[in-house]
Length: 83
Image (tube, rainbow, N blue to C red; front, side, top):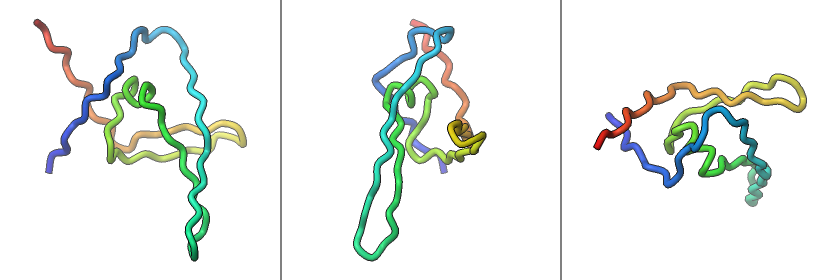
């Protein structure tokens, strides 16, 4: 079954500059359930990485202040359309 790829409205202007994104950890509290924590990926970062909804990811703990996000099955980048 092939997943539909979603187009995001952002493009990366430069691959040589280092960019940082600040995110806020969100808590979801439901009755009778343990609190769940979520991190949202900013749309510009998702576009830069060509991330798609439903992709499987894994966090790797490097130390108490550094995490590495690993894509379990990264999609192949699309070829640019020539006009």
